[in-house]
Length: 262
Image (cartoon, rainbow, N blue to C red):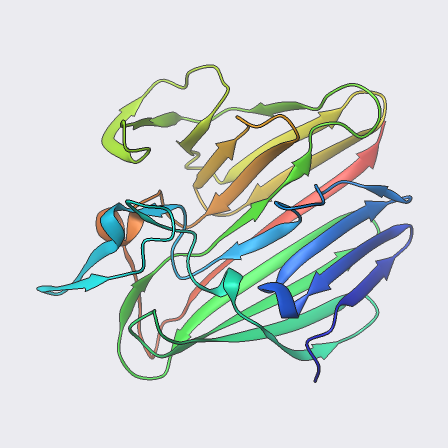
């Protein structure tokens, strides 16, 4: 199937999926109102096979050091598939299934599958990473750019993490867990019961981001958007908290955004 944009609809909700642009959710409109930032940094992109920054672009494969391209010097950031063209496996009115092969510069063969499923009051994103042969460490995550303002008051963010990962001068976790500090943030938080965060545009809309994963990065240091990023591990997790993908055990994760009008 082609890599052209796909439009999903359910009730008054409409989602644009962009296989040709990194498997990204290009837009989410509720009653015609766009919730995701447009422009240079836009939509919601998948972070695979790692999330956030990997220190110096290096991680260990047994005793061997693997080197990734430094696309955010001095680190490697947000995986490789957001820069790839994905294949559309199948679509319906309210669901799209996309796949993307893991190729160079990722040093192991594998495949990522993403399911984008829309309901009248929710969007669920599900991803899996599988290997054909060699086992390897991997992470899954999503990086949405939610508009700070929908034409009324700025959004507020509510969440109750158990801890915050202390951030070093290199923007990576130091390994120390600290009590959550007030924002603005470009920080990783731990939520052992699963990620739950609520974005509220006063008088307009409430949107909940949930996931069974226990890690979330919140990035709200820029003026236009607020990013709430569920993921399977913290930044630099290929080194500090690797999930091993094997031929018998793929890595799977999902997140749901559910909304209601206020």
